[in-house]
Image 1 (cartoon, rainbow, N blue to C red):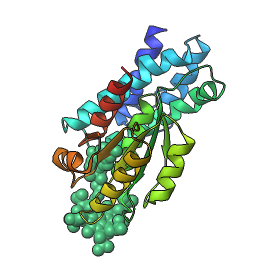
Image 2: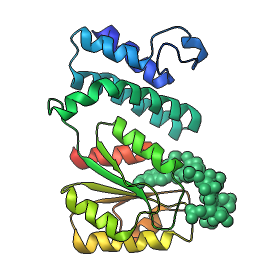
Image 3: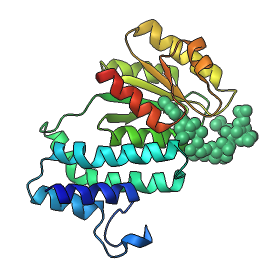
Length: 222
Ligand code: B1M
């Protein structure tokens, strides 16, 4: 069983989705995360074991490599795709309640901002870390954000902004959240942001990259 999990970890980290996937070339004709997850379940691995001992560590390695600039966006996207392929087998166990998520994370790009590539990467990494992710998309309106927080008590919120002109909207959104749900933690990110800006607008944390976001969320529940 240990060997199955190790193989799966390596496949997700390398971004090998399924047997027919040509990427990465050194894994040609080998099983990908899709087949390996199915196999691990058939061999008797528990879904939470697969998640905790293969999928989450694989995505953590990917996040750390990305932070150290050892890999770039395309490789990270392939690993996220491999993670999603594995999750097709694991998700039914979440739905049945047999496997628990670490928490709920609402994420969106702030009002007026259509950039979603970075936000999507963060969402995928956080899902890969075992959280339920509710992606509100781009150009999220202030009212919509509050409605969703109301629907998901205890959630953590993530806001992304890529434009200096939409940073002001982020400030208003953080203000709204803190005014109505003072206990709700808000994580912010995006290329023009900084820790100073995060403090100035009253958000709880700033992360420059997806792995920093995962580390922050995991600290919240530690
Ligand atoms: Co636009 N754009 N864009 N753009 N665009 C930038 C951001 C810009 C820097 C380009 C430039 O001028 N050099 C510039 C902003 C300048 C500024 O604000 N000072 C700019 C502009 C001006 C615009 C328009 C206004 C252009 C126009 O129409 N005149 C327009 C605005 C539209 C709008 O949003 N209302 C616009 C439009 C677009 C496209 C639609 C064409 C497209 C977006 C497509 C899409 O996202 N689906 C686009 C793109 C692709 C870019 C660049 C080229 C790339 C952005 C990107 O995806 N980077 C960008 C220039 C650049 O960055 N080099 C640019 C890759 C991505 C992985 O990085 O998003 O930073 P990033 O995410 C990182 C981190 O920031 C962090 O993790 C990610 C991974 O490391 N992170 C978080 C992000 N969110 C996080 C949240 C977290 C934690 C970490 O917690 C919640």
